Length: 101
Image 1 (cartoon, rainbow, N blue to C red):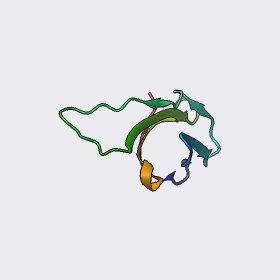
Image 2: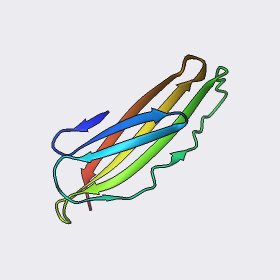
Image 3: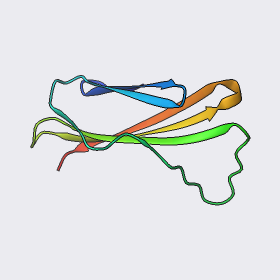
Image 4: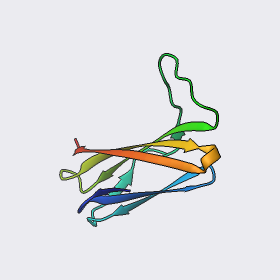
């Protein structure tokens, strides 16, 4: 869960091979999504041996929150680490918020 008090809350639910993102507008201002939210490839430099059954993922979304002239742009990056034999998925997230313009 990512929580920006008074702005938005983002929850992620993992079901099978899908990550469902629920975005809640907490401020009542208009919200406009800017990207598709689909997963993206993960690139690594050098040799990065991954143990068998370990899968990494990268998801991102962006949206604008607020009226023109008083809006903020939000970019969210979610990283997933799936450990298949344990049935565990670890999700870490970061949101970057800046004045639109």
